[in-house]
Image (cartoon, rainbow, N blue to C red; front, top):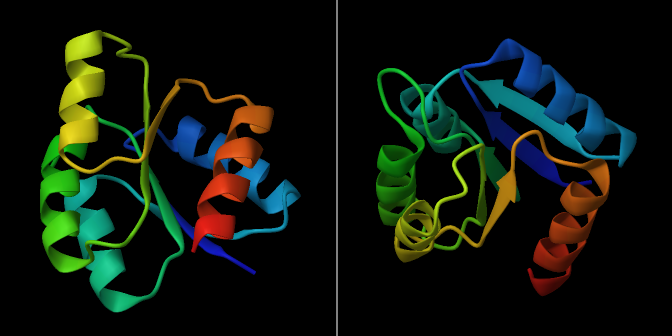
Length: 120
């Protein structure tokens, strides 16, 4: 089964995402910011990453830039309350494959993952 990394500085959001993903049959690993997420990507293999944007130490934009250098084929989905077009465009330009509004709906998570995992 797919292994999914969840990066968010909010424990509540990480717990909610992990619960959604586990109910869909996926295993999860959690990280508290982009720096922590990069360390986890270096240490283990993931099929997909869900990341927040606004976090301390390393934000989601920095994570996207760095992870695309290290693991260019790793699908990254941004989860953010910031739905401005400029933010969307910047995320997609940095290599995100999708952006979901925060908090994500389980149906949207399931749909994006089935698309991602079928493509890989």
